Amino acid sequence: MSTTEKKVEPLATQHVLINESRIAYGIYGEGAPLVLLHGTPSSSLIWRNVLPGLVSVGYKVHVYDLLGFGLSERPWDPAVDTSMTGQVPVLEGLLAHWGLEKGRFHLAAHDIGGGVAQRFAVESPGRLRSLTLVDVVSHDSYPSPRTREQMRSGLDALAKAPDADHRSHFRDWLLSAVRDEAGLGRSGALDAYLSYISGPLGQASFFEHQVRHYDPKHTVDVSPLLGPTLGGGGDGGGRVPVKIIWGADDSWQVPSWAARLAGEVPGSELDLVEGAGHFSLEDRPDRVSELLVAFLGKH
Image (cartoon, rainbow, N blue to C red; front, side, top):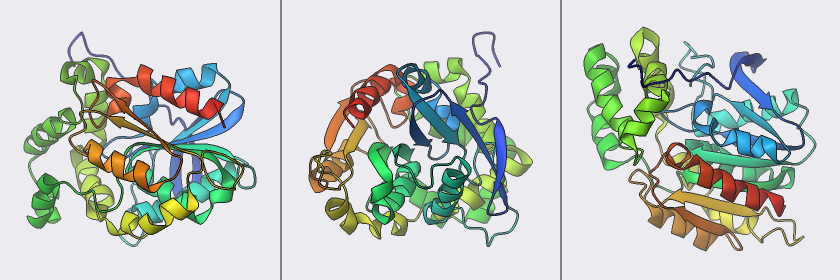
């Protein structure tokens, strides 16, 4: 690590067993409850620069690393489901641990965390005060053609690739998620994300717990239910207000997917963030925080 790079401190510093698996989580601030979900190939760290703005205006922010990601357990048993569908019971267990199993809360999600959030929202809409989707997967928007090609080559071979080759490839892949490549390196986030998916445990876990589940069935299943269940702008009709925030230069989930989501969810709000790629939370955390605070304040 160069002298200009920083070491990123984790947000998920507490641990609890949920469905017999260890989950790393953190809680910050006091006020109305807000749960933040991350995606792939990241961790709860991706919210680190957005979280202070949320805490400062009176939200109790709950973050955690998905099962098989970041600092949470990497299950050895392949029968343990770490797909988007399998992550919903983990979220349910955490909500119970946090005392949020009966009350309503705000939910915001990025990338495949958005797939988890969509499934939770259509199953339990009455539990949400609002839903914010940031550069999320939806419908059959993933995996990308590049990732599909890799998957066709066989995940076992990829999991056993030399460490240096693996790190080089996925360093470039992570950099393609942002506009400010140098900034991601200086922040220390690039090395942190790469460390979680590399090495003797991380590399194999990445393909077993993340890439293996890049299957659009998890969002296609619920796509027809988004419009009938969500939206309505919080007008008292029992529907869930929805905000969509998207990097204007997102090349992983191109903005046309954001427009499609906004068109399908009545009353939803869409904002494109200029100067931001797929990891808009890294490129423009200030703008994402501003948009999120304004939206949450209305609900």
